[in-house]
Amino acid sequence: MLIVLVGLSMALAGCSIPDRGPVVPYTYTELAQPLGIPNLRFYADGDPAPMIEEASRALAREKAALQAAGQSIATLPPAYYLAVSGGGDNGAFGAGLMNGWTATGTRPSFKMVTGVSTGALIAPFAFLGPDHDAELREVYTTLTPTGSFAGAASPPRCSTTPWPTPRRSPR
View (tube, helix red, strand yellow):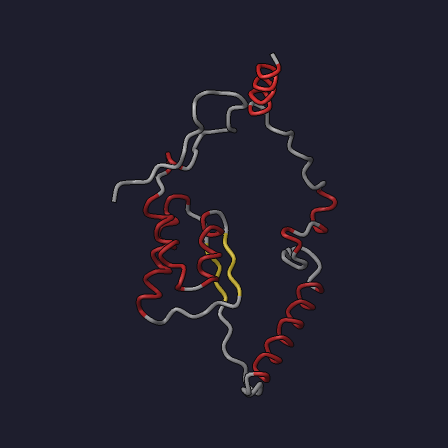
């Protein structure tokens, strides 16, 4: 009887999903620190002072690193910034552009990269550099729209049917 009770308890526990905690209240969104990283987000319609202060600290760190490497700080190296737009399935264009840019040998190292929608998915790869081009290419050439859980609201709480996994397109 004890074995049945333990088995039933385990089965029921496996069918439950803990309630999701409350989201950060709107009035506190500017105080939230994803991954514990301060000054991770700046808003165009917000106070520019924190962004300017962070930029000044970054400039000081860059100058210190150049001096430590024995390089002159009279003229700093060029800074490259990239903003990647959205486009849904057409985000593959941006991924291809990054790969092609690398192939030409003229792709710079970016100081800052940002993106919207699918561009936000490309942005980390673009920032990390050409060593991650193959991963970026794979994401946009092997994952199909139906394989990305399109239309699925949430996993079933208790079901014998497996939750769908991403489908990859044939190569």
